[in-house]
Image 1 (cartoon, rainbow over the protein chains, first blue to last red):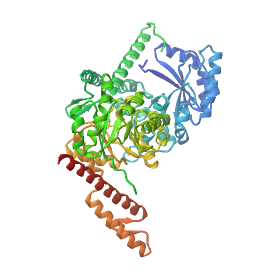
Image 2: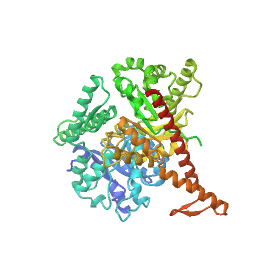
Image 3: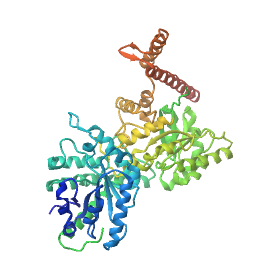
Image 4: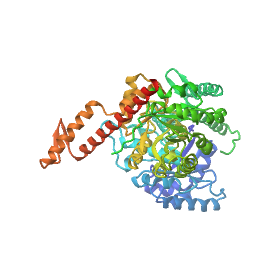
Length: 286
Length: 307
């Protein structure tokens, strides 16, 4: 059992068309089992097969869905209505199932702001396989230059809508099954440095590097705490900024430091509740 | 072609008596007296009392003088700031066009009651959230007073939850969006090349000149300077060099001759000169003249005050 924060059960990328009916059967049981292990459980569903996919996965133990190949606001509205109906039928508090929208096409990225605010269920955005779907192939250098633009735009749109941007800054050919633990960690670190909060991975040995990469390091937290203490002392003495060597730390830097500390403590709390769940101790609802 | 020359804008906490007293000697095109993040909240009321004299002092070297106000105390801060000699207000944490309209309305009232010509006070807007970045077009179009707009990348980092690392610039998109939208709207984008925005530091002149030149090449028209040591490099970087002036003067001549000879594309000094290059030459030459005028104004003021 991996230590992932979320287990995403895929009905789209890894399931051949002919196996989909059997994959949908018994999906609810899998969700329940996984949830007992402490991870949140999401299902990745197809934007064009919402009815069948949602009927298969919705149960009280499900946290939400990732909609792959999401194209339009209309699809979000469809998913929103279906989820509402299933919540009512299956004894789930109305409006609680989340949606993460995977924007893989130019149209979807163009409409990102509208999509992000199309439903109060939207809790996150990700680019999915945008570089493949949009034919943004790597250059001989291995870099996909336009991905940086798409990633940063997505992060800005997500920030603007108050939802979480998911993704990592991969470098070709690292992706999916090919990414070594080390390169996964690097992709997570780069991703965190530009504003992603977490990412998807497919192998067990990618989970820990992913978790580490997206958690502020002890060194960062130490630095942030020291900086904040010094800054606060300076402010109470009437100064507006502190100087350390040639660096100038002002109110903005103190906000950044607070963000690091808050993020680190949120990660610590989350790790503890996962450990508690694994050990069978009671865990408060998230 | 009227060109605003506001290359360097020195930020000074209005409560720092020594900084305020010396600010005008550093040769910045503008000075912004800070009532916001640079002032401890406990001193805010006291700080407002200092603004009137500080506006006068800061203007002694012919710098434009701005006051950075607190968005939450807009009326009190504007009331404390609108005195003869003030060029305008720097409005931080702008989130929406309504914020800009509100500030502009408050300035309308202040202009009327203080006998300042209506509509003359300028605005410099600072965007500090992802939401503001997405709405930049409506925000800068909200008032004719808006003369410059920039990102506060330090606060923006906190807003999107990033601990900035010098290797990975998180704001390529945001910066580009602001630069393009501002330019399209005829508003000057201001800002500095990464990572100095999120991690301001003192740099040796040569390094600062490189950063300032990079900033100009990102489309910015000026830099808000947290320290006087940035100013000289910033002014230099945003002023066309003698050799640029020389080359673009020749470009204009060569292009005029080409037109007279019946062609609109002509090779010169290893480049193809056509309409866009000639248009750019006009901008460079006009900028050069505007910078010279600005520098002369400042030197004259400095000489008069020192003498």
